[in-house]
Image 1 (tube, rainbow, N blue to C red):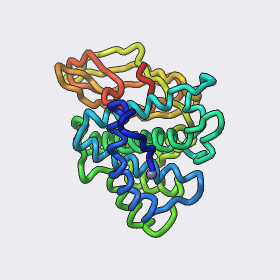
Image 2: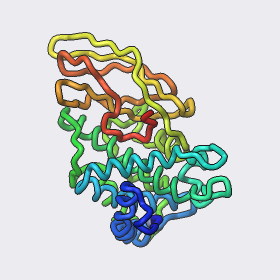
Image 3: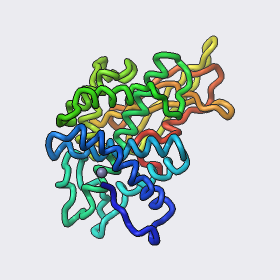
Image 4: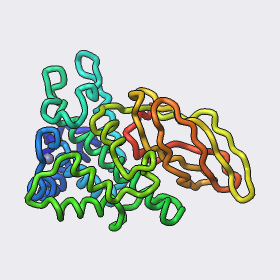
Length: 289
Ligand SMILES: [Zn+2]
């Protein structure tokens, strides 16, 4: 259940979030009532999924409001308590209600909803990008497709776990079944890297590009460079979408695994590409400034 305040004292983005309460509660009929959670370490997944379900609806109807809401969730993670510590320091989503303490009184709510929502957004976007990329080799779209790997995984989850409890690892196993080949880190059809770094971790890294070079071949341009991943643990792995900007178009080139603080990469771009950017649609819970 999300927090609900009197509308009088809400900022515009808080009003957007407050308006999602009914969709969030409706989504609990699937995530929370039909499928329940195994233990306190898994409770975040029903809150995160119910909330992300309401966000998917918002995205399809009001994409500008959706982006504002996601931005708000990110800012909350970075906001500081009275002692000056960022809320994200309360811990990973898997701490459950133990996230709330005298040090971070709203820890559970803000992290299981906010970071939880972001984790599902990350999963959905990277699976969609990777499937689009491997199937058609074309541009990733921002629209909601009925048949996308994330939605297929949720349908499997509902079918297999209705009337039962699911753990975080069991849920990730279902997502792994739909994991497109480009997301097989080190050749394994596994989300272990996501579980270790993002679900069991609390980082919000800063992603930057360095030393980008372009070399034209016949019919394409080869782009190389380095992705810096700052403010994260040494072993954090993130699937970072690399786009080319050509005229007014953004073209998804690849999802590159940023592995630790510095990762060199080489991707192929349309001929003549001279500008690339990381994650322009903000599909990763990363710092933006
Ligand atoms: Zn709820």
